[in-house]
Image 1 (cartoon, helix red, strand yellow):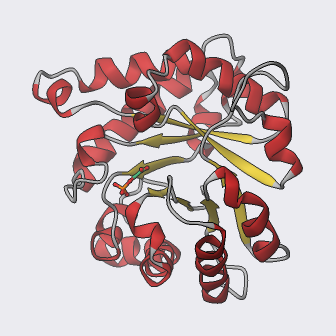
Image 2 (cartoon, rainbow, N blue to C red):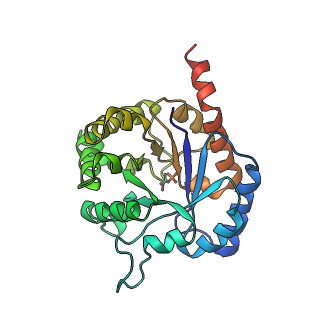
Length: 262
Ligand code: PEP
């Protein structure tokens, strides 16, 4: 059984006071441990404030990016040890916005994955095809290329330490989510490759999240799909009630899935 994981990606939203307020509201929503791992990834500038608000809570902290080197002359960058010092447990790597806007390459993404693992944090490796790639029948070629390149040089044990997020680019921030069937098909394909790169057991134990326009009203249908192990949420994670509602759907998902299969 894979414990569902729901991660909020706050992107470049929120000054420190906003981030504190949002983190406090999410914390209020989960006073006790639930059967879902919850994490939020605020902007770098809000990490210390959010770490303070979430201290002692069931909500983990993550970062949206990192530099592959531990330190050095890299103006404007943030290293993994700096994130670890602030209490981050997860680091998003290879988000499509970074691939597109910053021109991040698979090779850079692979170096970041290695750096995150080296310092004992969990990389959340994001892969996903564009709308054009899907229309051209290139979905599997694209995500397989991104996955293999992102994991280059990693041994079977290391592969088992990552979390993966399938985020079709055409679904991010558009209000158009992949159907549970579309996502499940890709998740199954990714799991097959992970099985080859590690082992069947490791692949079965690995979390593959879906991301792309997940909202409270479509979360149940996505999260009850057995291949979908949780969600990476952008826009909807900026509203505490909406994010809390999505996490609650993830908590209820196993029972809802059993109900649906009767
Ligand atoms: C994301 O940016 O990772 C994301 C899934 O965004 P949204 O939920 O807004 O589509």
